[in-house]
Length: 410
Image (cartoon, rainbow, N blue to C red; front, side, top):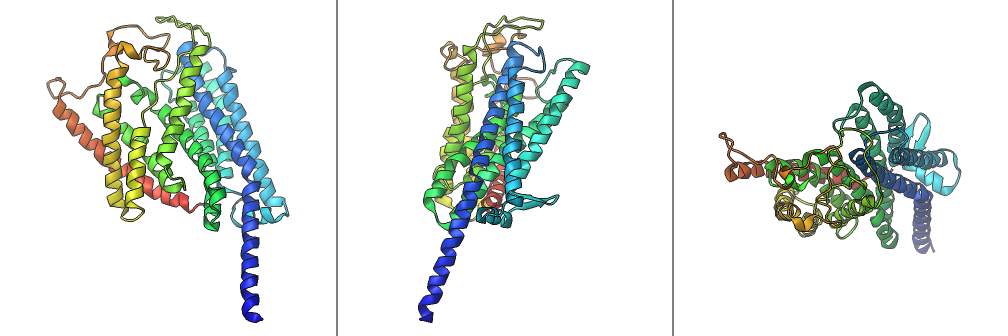
């Protein structure tokens, strides 16, 4: 009798634990989708806001992109605030399960991702009056990165990161239960939230490395090796998806392309002088990086080499990413500077209203030159060698961060 009772009791306890964990995941489901919605609004809002500045100029604080960004902040704050209150005060089995895997701050308990989103909400709301005062005191921004925009960007990235952490925690807890069906249902939210973070990072470096004219210089590959490779590797290591880096890259490219194709459908005219390029429609963002190509390489390497010997894996990932990305972007840049790319699909001829037209728009900028000022392939190769070192270090950091993300259950 006893030999059969104990296994039955153990199976019942295990089944109860699984039901509690599944209920806890369901409790966090709508706040997770609320944060994903907020993250989407943030990325759409910031791309729209940049387009507004490039097309109209700044006219008032209450532009549509700014309103959308603040709606995103409020949505994220309300959703995650509700989750924290439920985790802290609700008496259900799901809430108890959440409390057991929560972070305590000021007596309140909630998932780590929820706290990160709440902090990002506060930062975004604080940045609004700060940005308005900044423009009143100092006029127009000459770059994307100004002090109030830095505060805003910190809040935006925090909400995007918080949405990812909420999705990752649910994925990791279900993965440990062995429930492949529910786990696989969470891979898409994880990849989508990761793609939104890649979008935000691409926006941050758009001025330095966003246009095809910059893609024949080693500086472009050095910067993208630092900024683009690390999140792709981290999310690939953390995700349970079969092709995580490829999926993340596809999400990033998809969101950017939708915005690039949608914005020019709306009429708009400049309202601030000087107007050298009288645009008549919203100026779209540049064509996204072809990250799907190196994303496939990253996924293949990680499938073949596994999760051991991370330094060796990082070397393969760094060199593989740089080689694939270099080939894809180098020749794509050649195409983007031809008349064949000056259409609605590729949008290579879309420039700001205050930009003087000239031959410089179809030439390469910041090429690698020797001490005499002559364009040099040798200097380019030296710069690419430096970029490969950056890529290996970036990949190793990505693996380390991704391994930490796989352990997140709070």
